[in-house]
Length: 407
Ligand code: ADP
Ligand code: ASP
Ligand code: MG
Image 1 (tube, rainbow, N blue to C red):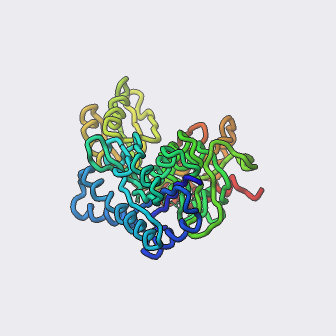
Image 2: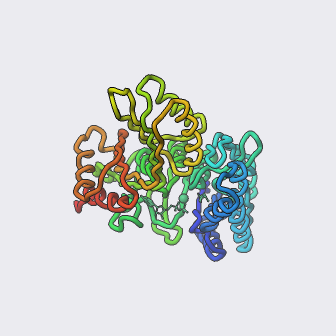
Image 3: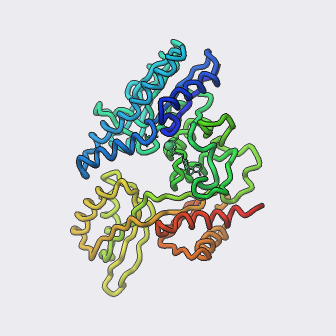
């Protein structure tokens, strides 16, 4: 008997036929004694369509109501999938995130899972039912429905797998594993048999949407092996785990990621004195705004003024504009600029630690391709460059070609 959590993304359940095919596949690949939890996303582009509906009502939406709306997408797909199992003679039950005991913070539209109380899921499994859980949603201490940010169903699946101590968490999607770059952008990208939690976390954080970053954190915390594989084939995909077991460590760079979802903000002419950066970034932190790349440069040392440039995620832009307008007045700045035509491209690999040539090679690849670098940031296992958005695809390809030459 195995305890298995399988997650199917939006494209895997986009139509009634696909939902029926998911039920068929699960029944084919599991035995009646297995305990099976299925986590599903909303059908196809439902979440985008719901966001468009909200946009049609107002540009300035209340995030609680946004969650109330977005959570409906997954409620459709769980009910349909449970019906598909029942129609095939297998007992199944659908549960919303709150019913499945997923307790979250109250940061609407980007809540974190704080705890899982799996009693109901366990009770249903004990009755021999397939349990179909809505991804992407939970409930806050306020008793309000929350959502976990785009791609959040991955996190639901891995968190449930951790809470139930599942044997494996399988993420079924429209690609057959994790590649060295988005295979839709770089057709020559290589599929990896394995990747470590740390490297996958960095790839995801830097824009590889195949896994939501928090899901990888969750996998690492609970040591749940994650298998990323295709819904449309039975081939095995990529295993995300703590350490490599095979030959894969030979690459210094594991992958190249791209994030188009960034905005560059320039705070121009801020006073060059202690406490200013604190004022700007603490105001943003107070509203749960994650700031990414940060650069401070001297504009005019005589006049003692600086420029501060940083990046944020695009969904936070409206909120950041409001916060910065207030802070700008308070500290007295010359100007504020918001640039949405940028993208971040990154190289990721644990092997780059202590290997100074890697940054130079990456900059060389971009330089040779005629691509200008606007901001640079590094971590122990990644280097990121901000470039013009219309050059991002060329930038990813150039970096990938440089590090994944035929070996
Ligand atoms: P789902 O709806 O199943 O959650 P997503 O669209 O969220 O699917 O994630 C799958 C997509 O991730 C792929 O279609 C692919 O374009 C993209 N992707 C980005 N980077 C990578 C990568 N390094 N490896 C594989 N897929 C990637
Ligand atoms: N439906 C949500 C989204 O589109 C969650 C998910 O698919 O993981 O982001
Ligand atoms: Mg996804």
